[in-house]
Length: 223
Image (cartoon, rainbow, N blue to C red):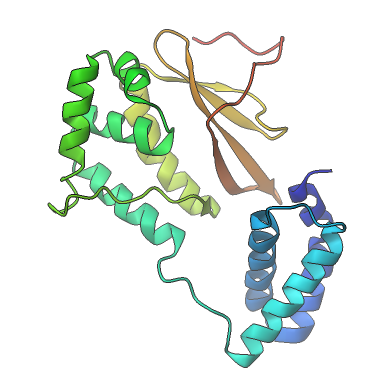
């Protein structure tokens, strides 16, 4: 059983604990979500995922009651908003290079093959991007985690057209035992992949996977 499956199984119990402690459904949902993030970020698998999650949600509720729960300096979505703002100001080729490099994690050679230009031209575009964020000389970092159906939808609506515009295709395929898609360049070479965590019929988290591994034998051929 994966961590996410363990979380889904324990979620009703976690919500019940949080709701009793906080007396608010919305605050309880937030506490449950934070417990999942802590569990997901734990480097080593706990002996009991259920026990870890119960302890985590209890601590989070106590921190909330005491007003001591720390707030992140810059939420992941704030980072994504900055990156999306930059994307909107780029031309189509620059946008494709940014997405391939910052989102999919492609190297210069991969990007050059995907967009159909020389590596030297890609390096020039990359240099331009490094000063495109209000002239500060730094491209806003792409967040490690983007959660929430609305946020995921906005990100996909921004980056997918940039990729399709240079001939990148998305092939539906299970990735890491989750529904997802594999990105291929115009030559059919796998660039990256995404995997989706689906909770209650809605996208909960999108994960970028650098090396999705070989496609299953019955996977559809790229078009």
